[in-house]
Length: 508
Image (cartoon, rainbow, N blue to C red; front, side, top):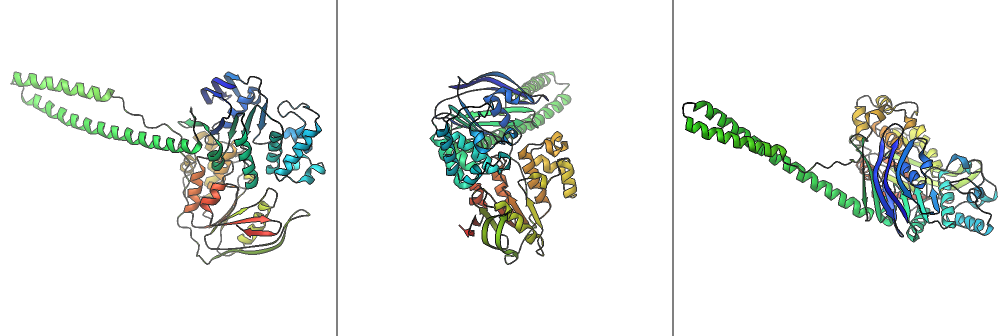
């Protein structure tokens, strides 16, 4: 059994991320940790595994009892410690202690088999490839293969869906669902959350990230979101209704009070009437006091979703050629990834490109970019997975926006993305990956581009923010060419889907 009692996490700068958190994990629990970017989900997960993992930047108090559980941990970003190691070295070391774990070649064989089942290129193992040379998706698969090979008592998975192709996502889902031992995971993938989670821990930061709040529920993700939205809507309606009613009563009392005050002035020579009026005034004041002291239903104190609005003036004629390109081959260095690629897009279509990890989707986008940019009448915005290609990491969010579009209020825009005043002035390199993603997306939107080329646009975003991104792109009147593994994004936003494989682009 894993238990947490009265947990508090506070950063070295004095910001409280979580307070008074207590829970117990039992067999079969699939606990999803959700919340907006920068709220401390990854810090909380690391603290639960071992407070030592966060001691450089946060203090942890309270009790965490693992009962000697053997913990499997999938990191959001694989520790740079492993860069110089080969793939198999990662398996035969303990991930947390970094010490040699065992020398069991049957398990090593099983590990390699699991890598193959995840679509991992076996040549990378045979050639002694260093971990630093693996792609983001391959590093996730590396961690996942180890989790699938060794049975752990408790699993912690930090954004395990990042960079994974759809086929591997489905394997991951099956793996989590089959576990009888508890699984704690952070994910932006709504489909995974909906299919797997049976407990929800929602972490919020209220009042400009000065007040921590958490909600712990035993239910599915869909049930939680629906119940939360209904509760917020109902409480909001009741709260505002009570306030309108109270204001109405106050106005009536004010009018009566004024009338009585005038009557008192006018009947100074009639003591009997005066006494009646004075008594009436006392009653009015008593009613005012009762109104002032009446406890009203609180307006819900919740963290609102982000807001981004597309420029509605952007448009493209239905017959406008966006791209009509043919590529004999797609290469990564000397390696041929695909052949005979053909893609034709006309008008404001929203196109998704899917495919296995390493098949060349990002490479294809980069091949298309110069073609798009040299097409007359097109203004192209590119959202890269590498945010430093879009943003100057030594600059601040507010300066970035000022220099992008001088007609818009940068403070308002950043406020809609839930940036605090302090974060607006931070260097971008100090922001969370989710904040960098939101800022990158906002930048290319306010550039008023009529074509958006997006490489994993929902990566690193909160599942509660993803509906906003889908709504934004659905209302966008330009063309969208997107690489994505987000199943909900593909289903709700994209008109056409193509799979990239060795034979080229295939419509699916």
